[in-house]
Length: 108
Length: 333
Image (cartoon, rainbow over all chains, first blue to last red):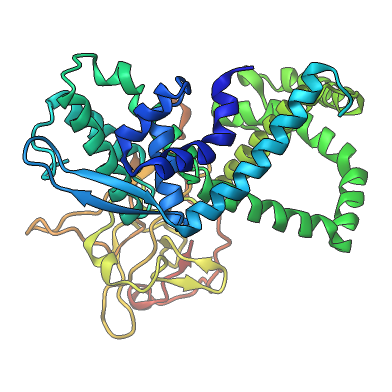
């Protein structure tokens, strides 16, 4: 199965987890996701997800001006984002455990 | 698009930004501005990295980027919302119409009338092309100018159409047939509407200026219909030419223009000219000459004879003096 298909469903969890670790601007989030092993994540997907989570009130944003180069729009997780991440994380673990069980041949 | 926040963008990056902007054109301004700002900062960050990989390779085509962005942001795909919403509304209305009891009646009636349509369709298959080619000859069309061919082709086409109608066709063929039939019926309807409309009176004719003041198209109407000429006779039955006629108030008598002639040829009115060059419209009978613009003059009667009239017979013993002042027969045309 194409990893990019799987990625779509878990991008919310992944992005929230990255931002919980430390505030980040768009390109920074892209790079951290990739270095964590999600190499197939598309730039547009990350920006779209950040925008949607921000709209949903799970993220806040602030601008950091830069003397050299462009200013940066940082995203930070808030309480709502943390609770969304917690719920999504539980769902993810349950799901992964179930699929793992199926793959290893043990009764589900 | 201007980039006040990232002036360092290359032309390539600016073009990319503008292309994505176009792809997002249907989104609300605020949403679009936010997404584009992110992209602009992203492009600036990429440029800062010193990576000379082309933007299109790095991020994909503007259309693909915009599509992925929409999908991830939970926004509708380009142009997907409005048409699908409209389509859903149409489908809902169509379903409502189908569910109506009257629709069932119409369907049943349509099924019963289908053989009639098959017959009409066969006729129209021959008649419509003939009419379009100017070979219309009602009721039997004359393909290539031949009535006999029409008599043979119409029944053959009707038979073919009925056979086709009774046969079960593949869905695509059936749909094609329905479409072709609809086009045929539409063309036939337009042609029929065109033919039954009144012929234009203005085509190719110039009216004497005095007609402009006349009321309607027929300045003079008798109990038998529009009067287009007056044929004067002397009491002894001699046809008179160039008789000037005036009405009860001394105004020149005006008659209508004759459009149609028994031989089918077009004619133009030739009014005699007065010494000052002004045409005299009330000289009777009116003189018409063959329209030089009309086809073959050999097919037209050179002269249009006066119709036969039954002249009254006056008493023979009329004093010589009275002949000059006696009644003059005037026959309306």
